[in-house]
Image (cartoon, rainbow, N blue to C red):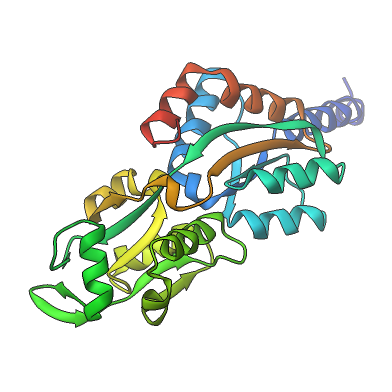
Length: 263
């Protein structure tokens, strides 16, 4: 067969193959609180279905919401704020109504080198805020308490609500440092830039954070529920719908969500 004929025959095949390959791509904008759980779910999905592993961009739920409203090319939005998903539905940005898949928890995360004088409890936090100090590496020091930015991060709002309910907000304010997302607030403790953080339970249960610190559960009555929700977005691919269904009904996804305290 002449070379030019072979090339003509191959070009359409290449275009179709590339198009099919592109259609299988899944791009997800997800709350950073879900980073470790979602990475495991994505890997399990790829093994189970043969789809390529989704590309996941992690950020605060509020910032991702704004990006989607401005036309960001995500197939799926996964949020720690169910109201943001509802707003996308109302704005006709979604396929269907979305779904709620988990309930988040708030914890006080404390680095391994930090001790609270009255013990590892909320009483210890109260005492630390009253004195303005904690013990770190056997020395009393002024401390930093990290939270996500309440303006666009659901766990930041939950942290502020909990401190206000516990009547600790005013005492805490001089000690606060803010992360753009809850995973950054956690990273402040891991890196030593802060002694404590109010973060999601799902992050605190991850192996890297369990190795770097420990946590105290915050009673959910102290803040509004942090409901994890997701939605398929306009223009999403068949592969994206498969991933959505996998999170919704797969036993593997269910087990991973339970492992990270989201059930």
